[in-house]
Image (tube, helix red, strand yellow):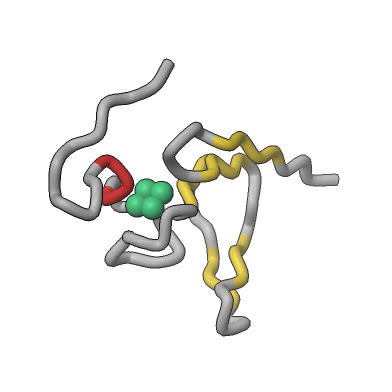
Length: 68
Ligand code: FES
């Protein structure tokens, strides 16, 4: 049995460990080859469904500071 875990990064992506595929909102099944993948939650990624770090920039293009 495969275990899949998901970790939500505040202000960032979902880190998914152990997935073999991801289903996009269009229903496309995208194979996963890496042990951990980052899924975009902010909607700004140019590589959906993957996070491309665009979440670090506000709508005005200014880098956001991490809130720890
Ligand atoms: S969460 Fe990283 S680009 Fe959307």
